[in-house]
Image (tube, rainbow, N blue to C red; front, side, top):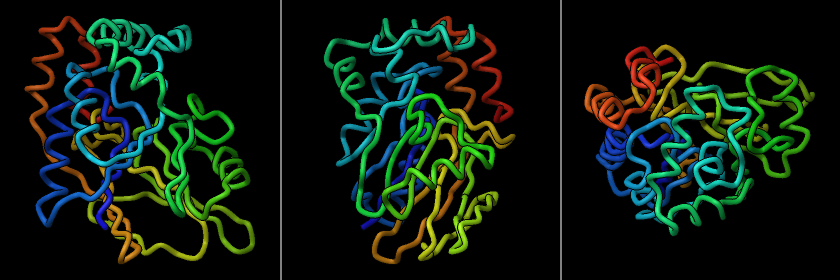
Length: 244
């Protein structure tokens, strides 16, 4: 079974389509896992929701998903993110808002727990520093967890002695699932923030027990043109060129 792990799609249809084309070159995707933020920032929220839902999938709620659905406010968003969230909310129909509103904060798929931020703060916490990683491992009830939110691809592993270490995850790196526990962040499909503007995603081969990170070129200019035409904040379009 081939499972696509696509986090932080952020309504970037060109990036999401490029990821799907790349992932399906060797064969069909059997399932899609999304650890949050299907929408927000980008210009194609409805199309991205529809594309996620066209696959057998499990998705969890991200902060931008819930803001677009009207389930949370935008007080904790920066000005550009809040403006984009308001714009996104105005693009969605009732059924799309209901879909986002009803996404669970945490989901379980076999050996994996999916959550957008962290298990102690599913919608908001950025797991980037060691204390947050250690807290995530303490709360995990499955061997591995998949997170998003930071838009930065990385792996964190907990050894038998309880020590935790983090490693960068680069294009083409294959991880053989160990007996020790892992936190996996596949990076951002629609708005990478690691200095690499290419869309990031991971592919889980459940039969081989491997997860591979991939980076994919997409038509950034087309997305930027749509964002400008929609009147979305210019800074959100510009940052796509730099992976920030």
